[in-house]
Image 1 (cartoon, rainbow, N blue to C red):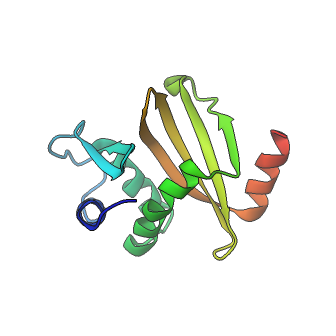
Image 2: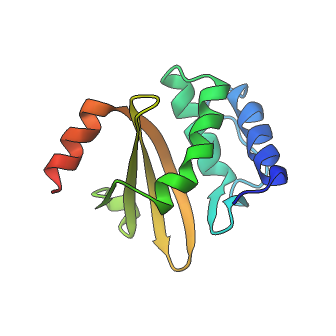
Length: 137
């Protein structure tokens, strides 16, 4: 389970990156930030997710909530499929449907040994998630 210090660090970076201009450089982009014991994300990937979700009209609180759901989505997924993106050939997509918000969270992760590196994360409507799940059953 993630400790409060890690939670504060992720939330601080989300708030910082939310107000940066798109494409702005950050310090230590390849430094890993811990989401949970075995789940990490580079500062560059975190910034990319914040920028992309901001473009999707997510607010800071929604992005922070998404990061709280990442460990459960990875460790208790409703769906696991290979990622068809050629750039990340060893990656998989984990998805979990959250009925309370009527959306699913999809997490793209690199399967590089015992450490899980998050590449991207985003919510999808329930109907689109069900269609994706039906495709791979």
